[in-house]
Each structure stands twice: as structure tokens, then as C-alpha cells.
Length: 191
Image (cartoon, rainbow, N blue to C red; front, side, top):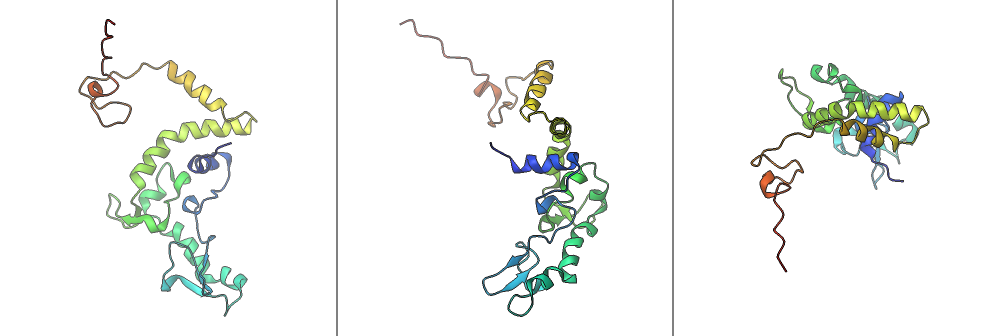
């Protein structure tokens, strides 16, 4: 079987499960780094002097894992969320993403918005009903493949969008429709 990590993570909130991937969890700090020289850091994205918790040759690993600085690092992910994130309808799906990606300002001018926010929000908003249905199928013991049958049935009842000759092709090629999927087939030769 093939699993798509983003899809697995996206369905977890609808199953009442905590995210497994640190970037989508409410807090982080559960994936520390131990460098070759024994230095212990809060996260692999923060191997910087200010995030060094200690050294395995000087302190026990369990002690560093439970260090107040390590816990504070993880909690900061949640406590530093801008208001726009805390009020977002898809917060449970991304929880603001990884703090390393919080590089831009919100529309209100507040620091700390994930620079991937617009794309993630669009994806999660669009896919939310599908993941909700997927969770219902999982909880009912139904195979995951059934979701695609449901989607196809729903799509078959919708009218296909009208595409003009000069519109961008809906296949995503970047070409005009008339130069892509709307191209007329070449006439058959009379041979």
C-alpha cells in the first residue's frame, strides 16, 4: 500500500488523533537532535547556539529531554501563534506549521505568520470535507478506496466547467486551452 503523509496527517484531527508530524502538532520539541560531538538541540531546524540544551557527555539524555528550556521551546510553537492563526477555521489541521516557516506578517501586521499559510489554508479548506468523509469511512471500518467512489459519484452529477479557447487549460499545463487539451485532432490522411 502507498500512504501519502500529508493526507494521513490531514485526516488525524477528524479521527480525534494528535498529529504525528511535528510541523502540524500544537507543540513541538519531540524531535530533538544529537550532533556527532554530543551536543543536544531542541530541533533539527534549530541547530543554533541559543537552542543548545546541553551535551550528552555532560548531562544525561533524560535530563535534557525534560529540561525546562526544551519544554519551553515546544510550547512556544503554540503560545506564539498570531491571532489570525488562533481564529483560523483550519487551525486543527496545521496548528501554524513549523515555527521556522513563520517569517511574514499577518494582514493585521502581527509577526509570526507561516509563509506557506495561503497555500496550506487553501488546500486544507478545499480538502476538509473529503478528510471528514474519509474519517467517517475509517471509523465505520470501510476501505479507504470507497472515498474515491463517493467523490466520483458526486462529480458525475456536476456540470463540467465551460472553458473558453483562450482560457488557461484546466490540466495545469500553463498553455491556453486551444493549444493544449482543446486542440483539434489532425485530420486523418486519406491513405
